[in-house]
Length: 176
Image (cartoon, rainbow, N blue to C red; front, top):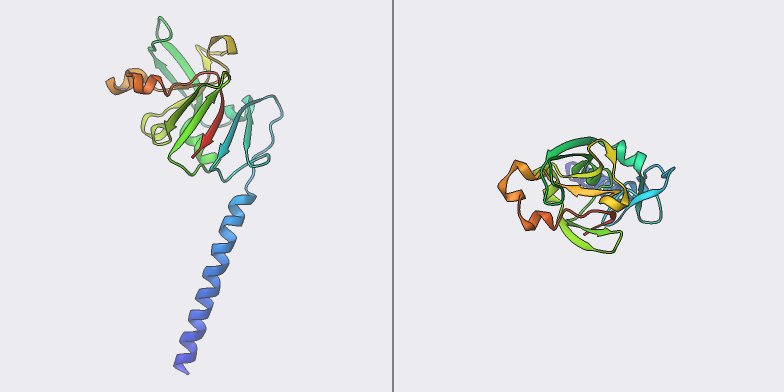
C-alpha cells in the first residue's frame, strides 16, 4: 500500500510538472500590449514575449510616455550646452515586452545599426528620450527617439564606446 501511495504522489507531481511546463510558454505567448492609437514610432521584435502585432511590439508616443520615465541632465558631444532629456527607462521597456536576450540591435530611420547590451539599461539608467529641454525632438534634430546615457555621471560613459550606442532617430529594436 505504501508503495502505491508513493507511485500516486509521483504521478501527481509528474502530471502537475508537465501541465505547468506546457502552460507557461502558452501564457507568455498570449500576453499582449494594447495596440497603438497614434503613429507607430518604435517597433520591437526578436526574442520578446509580449506583442501587439504579428510577432512584434509596436509603440506610439503615448504608449512610450506611459512607461516609467526619467530625466537626464547631461553634457553630450552633440550639443554645445548641458541638455535635459526625458524618456522611457529602457529597463522598464525591456521588462514590458519580456525581452529575453543579451543585446538589442538598434536601427535608426536611416538604417544605421548598433548593438547595445541590455545590461546597460539597468546599470546606467539609460533612457529612450523623446524630449529634449521639455520639447519633443523632431526627426530633423535627433528625434523622435534617442538612446541617452547619463554621460556626466561617470568618465566611463564619456567614451566612444557609449556614444556609438547612443543611437538617434531610433525606429526599431531587435532583441537577441
